Amino acid sequence: MILKGVKEIMQMIKKIFISFCLGILVLIMLSFLLKLNPQTKLAGVFIPNEKPKLEKKAILSGKYQFEYDKWFSDNFPFRSYIVKAYDQILYSFKSEFNGIQKGKNKDLHGTMWIDGYLINEYDKTVVDEYLNNIDFINQYLKSKNKRLIYIISPNKAEVHKETLPFKYKLIDKVVKNKSGLRKYIVNFLDKKEIFNFDTTLLMETKEKENERMFPKGGIHWNQLGASYTLVDLFEKMNNSGIRIPKVSIKNVTYSNVPTSDEADYKDLLNVYKSFNDSPYPVAELEYTGIDERKYNVFGMTTSYTNMIVEQFFRYGMPFQRFKRLYYNQLHSELYYNNGVISGERWLPGIQMDQVNYQEILDSYDILIIEHNAGELPQAHMEFVKNFANYLKNIKN
Image (cartoon, rainbow, N blue to C red; front, side):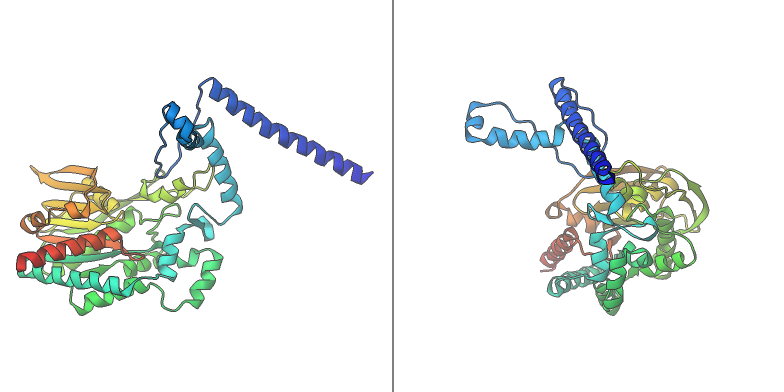
């Protein structure tokens, strides 16, 4: 009798499930026929497939069917809602999906960045060539009374290693040469007496003082982390003879609204419900001392500098001009005009073989190279190689 009751319940559940699936298919079909296409926003990079033109030749060759299938897979009604529902299931039952790892206390990490901290495989020959070019550029700039500043931004996986997913904690105990790339680069720069600022120790120290430098839902530092970096960096610059105004953190308030960097991984989950990571620190900066913004600065940077650019726009900067490349995807230009910061945060990208290296020599006093501790980006290697070759040609 009990078995019969269980079978009836299972049959009912099966019918409900089949009816639900058929209902969704019918709803999608009707929406498509009625040319209705309800969608919701999905985060991440998306390159749309164009709807192909109906041509006899394309149909006979099969090209039309192939391209139509690609277009339809991106554009059928309710697609984005279904994607979010699927990701919600994965988020609820898996610790990893879409390259995102869910660690302790729901702290989000990226698989690539965890590998950069624990495994960090790199071609020593390639890195040596890059560093030798850095050394050549540094020596050339010094001969022209200019400066090179090398900044390594922190890897969240290294600073927040206590929140890594369980399996990575086990790997962490076994691996001895962690953060190999970062340590290798810093060791070279120190030997060559090249001005460098490895922010990892600063971030770790502040975290131990219960000041959170990274949001749970983001892979980059927050406003407070970026602001502490500026305070420490400008102090080191002054100590090295680069006379600029000093910066301090005047006030810290909190907001329930994150910046894009503070919720970038949380957004990439593409789920309906995740977790609450607020409040987010809002750091107000204050400049004191020397009132000469005479230095023009050029930077080859990464997304970690986005927050610094935002802080410059809000509270000013100790430079006359600051131009930075964000890989080869975007670039920014900030400058003072009648005492007011002007410029653009987001401009089209510049390919490394199209950079005006002579302009850097003529118009800028300081060159900043900044990248994350977990990787050495291809764009940076190309920039440094091209710049070094340009300088060698001038010298010859």
